Length: 119
Image 1 (cartoon, helix red, strand yellow):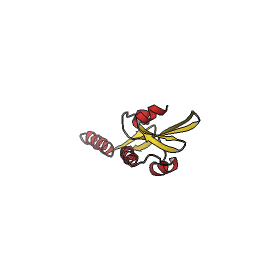
Image 2 (image 1 turned 45 degrees about the vertical axis):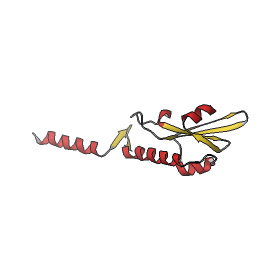
Image 3 (image 1 turned 135 degrees about the vertical axis):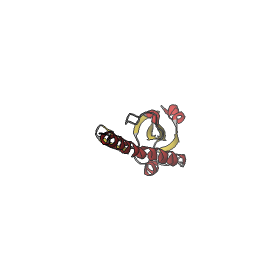
Image 4 (image 1 turned 180 degrees about the horizontal axis):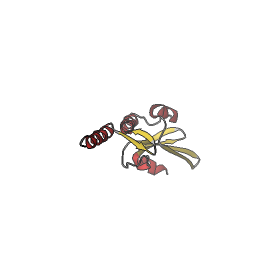
C-alpha cells in the first residue's frame, strides 16, 4: 500500500521538475519564454536609432503584438517584444513587453516613455 503514494509522489516530482506546463492542452516549456525575454532584452539593448524596421525585425523576430497609426502625415509602427514576466496566465500582455517605435519605418526609440510620446 505504501508503494502507491510513493509512485504518486515520484510522478508528481518528475512532472514539476521538468519546468514544463500544459496550458489548454498545449505544451509550453517554461525555459522558452525565459530565454525569449533574455534574448529580446539583449537584442533591444544593441539597437541603434535610425535602423530600418526590417533590420530590427531580422534581429528580434516576430513581435508579441504590434500597432500602427498615422499622425500629422507620418506613419508610426510600434512592435511589442516580450521582455519581462508579470502574469502566469499563458498570455503575453502589454505590461510584459517593451515597445519598439518606428516613424516612417525608421527606429526612433524603444521603451514606454518613447511610446507614450508618440501615441
